[in-house]
Length: 85
Image (cartoon, rainbow, N blue to C red; front, top):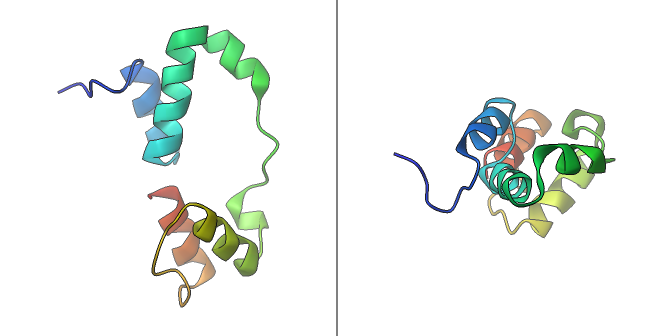
């Protein structure tokens, strides 16, 4: 059943399969539907991979996203929680 808040369901599902969070996948899919996929692809991102960040940086990112229960997590668990919030 399609999500009425997702304007490009195919792109959304592809992004989720690649590990994007629900929020990020929805944001990209809706922007692509509005502005065109090629326009969105030109923007690109400069953020480094979660694996390249320190635990402290990951905790800070979790805090920015209002994720709870991250303080005692190991790096791998933190990354999983960030990707699936």
